[in-house]
Image (cartoon, rainbow, N blue to C red; front, side):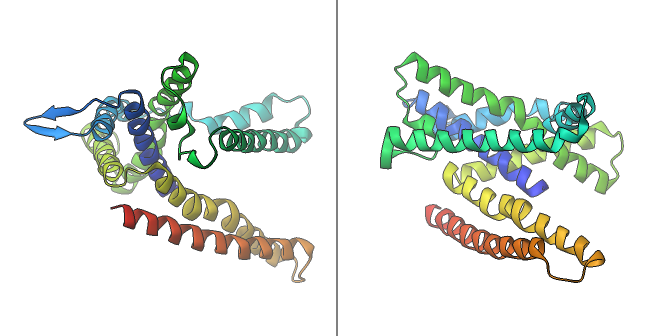
Length: 254
């Protein structure tokens, strides 16, 4: 989970660099006699801006996972919570899928890894969409880094030592910046995150855990066990092929 959060933080940095470079294509930076490209410079600026937000130690209360228990406890009929949860995931999945279809219908084979890169910057509506995309990483970056930092702090028994905590969080931001500058291709980074980590967390682990629990109470191979085994087989194929493909693309682009 922590590795997935780390890679998503890198994705956010690449996302910011790509979209800002789209808005300001002719911008270059000169620091101490060195010329820095626009995309790389924007990534560095983003990392400097979000760095102070990662130093706070009480951001987990703002994370999205807190919504689920609040919804559950606020329902008059809690037995309907699974139905509500399923409906929400179906609507979100349809929304994501519809956006992908619409993006392809609009731009065809010229569709880029981020649809905002295809939008014309001269239209005010496109500018609003791009700027909205830029704001999102600013509000979420610290939430992604905080669980990783807290896990490292717990393993090192840091306690309430603020200096060590700030050092750890700064090191995380620096490392994500270095990786984002080394792999400046949003599609490849997202492909690796989705195929290796998200595929494992959503397809392999739930089915494996379910089979482990069921094996203690039922030794027979029922319909649910067969379905889980099928999902695991398909999931292994997706994870292996997707991971190898994304790693190959990243290596070739370096």
